[in-house]
Image (cartoon, rainbow, N blue to C red; front, side, top):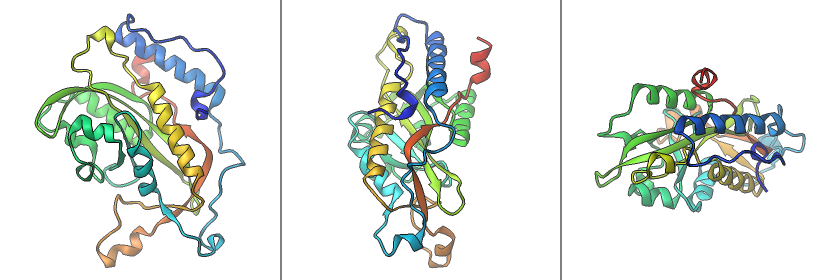
Length: 264
């Protein structure tokens, strides 16, 4: 069962490889907007799995959100990552084994770092940098082909597709808790007409796996940093906060290049 953002019950036009690259992006945007109108709820469902706070937990064992996401994403059968934009510098908190195989970086060298380490020694345009920053800040959808570098120095073209996914809210403040889902693919040897431009179905799989993984746990906490502080003096500044998990995750709508698409 798919998450609501893609479960509309309506047939959508297929993106074909014969369509020009920019036209496929425009068609994709229209597909997603249609799904948003019919499926994304304005507010979280009343059937949300509520984690009301430490008093209600009554000593129950809690699970760290980052650890849970890392466990879920590791098993995905394609290159993908999850990052936490509400932690400083938007660190990766999970990576699939296929992402490890693609980039040749071990998991220990991936988790806790911003994904820009893949850009070292590569030219990234100013517009792509701006659009990625916009996605990290707002959760709006970004898709693009970037020059990246593997651990052994090999350069490749990476089809990066990323969007924000709301998974719940902080129990105390009510602030949305959201993550950035990213799916990657090596398109170095593909002709332009063969490039799908985005990984909508694969992103749906990641979101579904996260939803199911969150439902399986009753007590989830999240920190505002990628890793617990090793400095005792700062420990109180990064106490874990309980998360009220949505019954269904919610994709963040919009495109980072919305104005370009509207004017197309």
